[in-house]
Image (cartoon, rainbow, N blue to C red):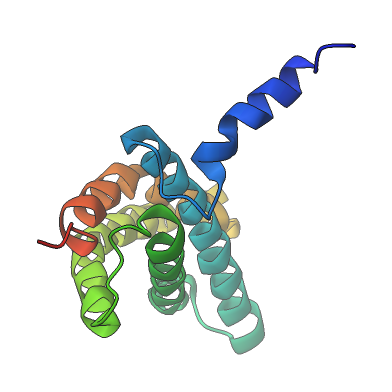
Length: 157
């Protein structure tokens, strides 16, 4: 009988880390899941931004203010069900969402400040706002993860 290829062993080893039916097995797994959900939020944020700019004529500043709210709501839903399922509120979901927004507000200011500065000063970012969204998102990632872990999805009790 032949041994499975190294890629299959790696995929099998990642099972507990990525399996949405299981709580994350540790802090690193939670960080990886947070990043995956953040990737989905990035796609949602950027897609919404481009829709608002090219279909509704909004400039990249006003469009981003609205698209950020869509992205934040997407990441809250993803994080409550995938990254923090063991900590998600059983009741009071609206309060949890407000806590998540409260955590996201300072992060949003950092994120939006970087985004706006890049749009204003970097011609590539002005032509392709996805570049500015990506760099601003990366810059605020750990701040958002820390706030989500300690406050938005804090342990009950």
